[in-house]
Amino acid sequence: MTEQTISLERLEETINVFGSFDENIRLIEHELGVTVVSRDSQLKVAGEDPEGVMLAVRAIENLMQLASKGETIHEQNVRYIIQLVREGKESQIVSLAADVLCITAKGKPIKAKTLGQKKYVEAIRDNVVTLGIGPAGTGKTYLAVAAAVAAFRAKEINRIILTRPAVEAGERLGFLPGDLQSKVDPYLRPLYDALFEMLGPETYQKYLERGNIEVAPLAYMRGRTLDDSFIILDEAQNTSREQMKMFLTRLGFGSKIVITGDVTQIDLPGDKVSGLREAMRVLKGVEGIAIMRLGEADVVRHAMVQKIIKAYEADEQRREKKEKR
Image (cartoon, rainbow, N blue to C red):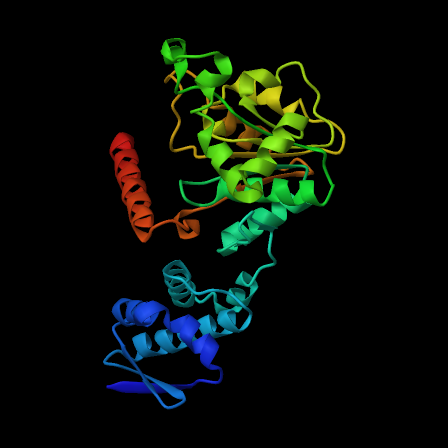
């Protein structure tokens, strides 16, 4: 049996790291095969595997460091810190105490939660065009909307424009009730939801009526030049080559573009090339354009989402191997 001791200095940080009903410590115990006991002002970490004990101690110490910087510790933080410690990336953990990107209408601070998200936010800040590619739950769209709202509040831009290609609706649009806007509104709902959370429904409606916010299908972008705007193209994997070129050339003076998508979820017909895939190839190395890839480690939804993504990635690799034979 191996045992190590951690000194506890501040009660508030310790409570934060332990979580409700000690759920965070229970998770560390389960993941690393250790037992953690609090005695007086110390934590005793014990286990049969010396490496597991060492990793648990390092994970707890890094979580305490994040807590000391005002970070709220959740299950997702704990799982991610354990992963970084296992991979020997401890030196980068302190950088996760990132600056607040945006404050929601209810006062919730929006921050990057993983190293990949942090690099993504920095890329948006430092580049004119940013491509954010990754699976569901990595915060591609949510962080882009938060960056847009932050830029709008700082008066860096005059308008936020959110758009998506209406691919999946296809011919079914004609069977939906109402005018064209009513038909595409349900499809654009994820973008509305993010803006509602950042601004609140009333403020959102006010800016919408003034023309400071526009949420529209990609087809509405044709023939326009968009100055002093923060433009987000979501679900970009479903654009055609022509649509992507059309969208990129809408860029005007004082504007930023963020393009988000998941190249594993392309809904285009088999004979059509994804505009996002093409853009990743064509724009690689162009100054002022960043291509950021987020992976399953950057998923900040339920832990099961990471497992699902891993399972699909493994299946995809098996299929590719079979096709090569």
